[in-house]
Image (cartoon, rainbow, N blue to C red; front, side, top):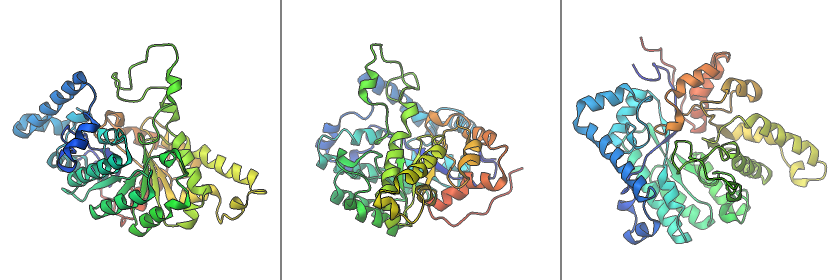
Length: 393
């Protein structure tokens, strides 16, 4: 018996929980020192090290290993999650979870890379992180390596993309903000990048973190002591950030539509992951409403062959949070837009993401459920559709 109970379900969002030496085999020691410790101050670091050491004890303790399997979703998360940083465990975790495949994103490694104080360090550190992620995912074809490619320098982004493709990337994560704070992601200087993704037949992704996080810093200056984060600590988002997670992806996708990227590259595909999706139906209406309002005087809008929302429907998928009403989103905007994700082994994925999504889909027809749990993911990755299995007895 697996967590999916025999159903074919793909997971559009999972993570590694990088250990302190994650980048060490791939990055020059001097650059590693300049980036600093992976997980915060001494007190936080010691707490995380204890969790990692406890997780490692499972390798030689069958009882602890069996207990972890029994609570694969509802049990320990973060660095203590089964397969959080150990590749062999992750393969077994997939066996027990039953997911047909899962996109694998980094976690704290991204924050480490973004500490780079110069462009050279940024791209070297990004390449090192990608090599580490590729090595983790090579153990099983179900683990889809998502490479990180910052777009700050178009030429270096192309070079990093080629290296990631050579390492087997199945998707590419790009920051959701304006590259280098200087130009639109739809700028023609990036055409070679989008063309290469289309040729390689792999999608780009936007994800909470790079370019999406939080309100502007000034909004945190409210005359009050800063509250704990989502998990009671200090390294994650707070309530004021949560409602804003969709803003950067909306700006990014608007640029991709308006600047003609989806027009020039009709087979380009992408996904917005872990930024919520309740905003998507109204976003599509706003795109088309703006199109109708401005088309009379805007030559770029006049040159579009499709409605703005139709470019999004053709190219982009979205992962809702388990707390969101996916059935209502599907009824409002269509079944072709949304995908299941577990966020494993992050605690934000909840102790039962499948159960929560199932509950919100009770009134939705079987074809729409099938699209949510696997078909849309298969379209995103251009996978051959997998036949649905009969539920386990």
